[in-house]
Length: 517
Image (cartoon, rainbow, N blue to C red):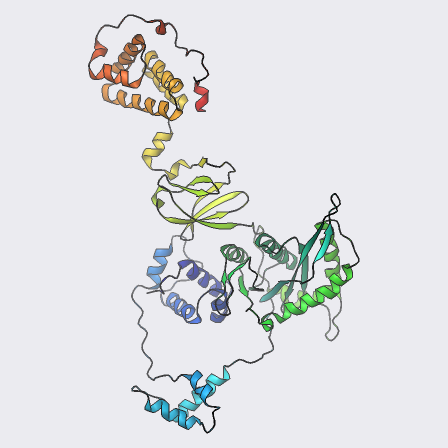
């Protein structure tokens, strides 16, 4: 069975990164909050079950899980008892301590099969060889870009008020060619962060397999050396550009040595040159930054032939992933539960979802223009975003059949139905729509008249309504009483003054049919 609590969303992302992005298991484990063992287990299960990428459209989370793990996986126990190599490595430097003595203690303290002395020594050497060391990073073309923000900010003066506001400087660099991008934004918040990365990819004319980003709070929910967790918006952005975001480990500058150097160069090449300039808008500042970046990328290397621009065209540019047809649209995610009326609340407005999901937890993807509702990573509804608080946006197909029929009856249709029965029935329907204290009460009363037509027939309903009009009591209760006691077959009562007109008396509390539109 899969590890408890692991969402199929991570499994789908794992398969995408392995097949589409072609990342190694170690890189996938760093990109997702999973151990490398779990990644290996799931990829092996997918391979054994013949699950390829992209997944079939009808393969939902439940079907994917059942295909991955049709039966409990049994991991055979190791043939040998593994020593605690950390303890061995810690005790070995002790005075008089030898590997021979540590092996004898290991052998005597175990009841299962133990390694021979030669195997014990060989496996310890392997363990020691995997310990921390410094290694010069080899950057593969098109694989990684590194991003961060410069420490210094740039002041911008508001011409109208004279207020000075500081702009942040975003810096990015490609691993293989050192091709550099920079721009200014007002904040380091998530909207500006995603916008800067989208414009960065447009500048590069393609996306890299991996983004090595600093542990920015707006994008990283949980900063961890081994299992950093990204928020849903950052994951959504990475999926849109077919990339993966791997935050640099906290307090590990070697993870982002390339961007540390790029930020230093940006501070010296760009910010130092701007220190005596006064800017009055963010656009003006970015225009100047782009001119300086163009000069920086065209500047010849000191120790290598060519420039950043030439190296980019030769190395990184051919290996970048093509950009999607449209840039990423910033979105935030919110969890919600489907109410009993088949709607979910998003920012005080109610949007419909299929009624089969009543009571289920869903995720709402909120952009500037749309609201998308997803259930188990499948989009189940999409609506135009509405600013009206307390109102409802409803797709009739989302509701049960009985509810849809209920909504089909508009005031205009009710009046037309009453007229088809007869003039007296139309008069009674009109009275319900204009004299009830609340529109919903009049609407329900008219639906009650529909029920009477089915029970007693149109002819008797028209006769009953005619008696009610003559009596001057046009309520549904009066019509029901006349029909249930058979009074509709008796002679009509004398006319009352209220029969002379079908128009409602003028009064501020009386609404016309237009109120229901």
